[in-house]
Image (cartoon, rainbow, N blue to C red; front, side, top):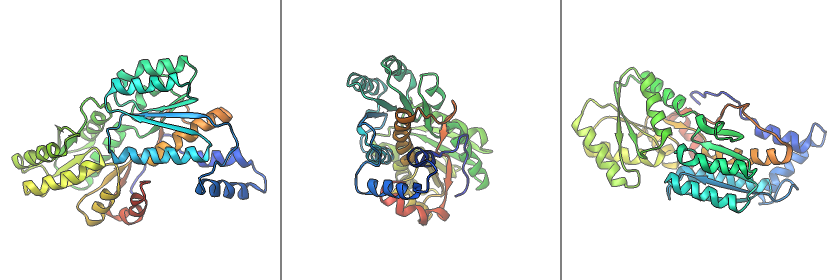
Length: 333
């Protein structure tokens, strides 16, 4: 892989191995038994069947969040967790979903903070109810302030800085940063980070991410009106393919780059329809969030030391696409 930035290493698999096996000579066999149990859909532990709820800011049909959810669900099987999932792309409704899980007296919560102001009171209520919270994906700056145990994801500004640096390496001069969800602080941070390190000029383009024809026409119109734009950066994998179509409509030669990875993005990297992608490993975010809550309930373990546990950014290109394509097709990258 091209490069990975980290503040805190992710070593939960090792921690889990220690918690389950210690250093005995039978540790290898027990670890193997745990893997077999997970593969067979059985719990690998005999801890109580705790209930964990996850509430994200995802809209319906977002492939990124399908991957996060899959990671969380598979960790839940292994950890004997009753896993609940809900989502809404509006902050007020997301907070109401959190409240509903608090009312159900769940044993742990996993939430995203794309719109942190809307979520602050809900997390305060969770804290008052004694429910441990892990934040994932967005809200790394607010996570500790809001009382979460840890944040798992990528620092959005650092991820943006990685994009700006990659564009410099590629000799790009004028870029378009396409924001598909207004009010999402993480998206603003990505574009701001890219502008910070990019030696060229970068403009923001706001589109309605719930309306792909609008996204396509918006990008196409911008490319037609400004032939100097040599790069389009989308902030989510589903929008990369739309940007490619917009480029074709406009007759542009701009390179299309994107945040996040899915099967279409992996194929696009392989065919060079896309230049690069910024992978933040969504499967890992879901999986480790559930696992960390299990570890906290089981052993009072916490990772991060007050800083985010980073799962990205990782710049992937056509050189990585072949190896990642298989994982993307099965829905885990």
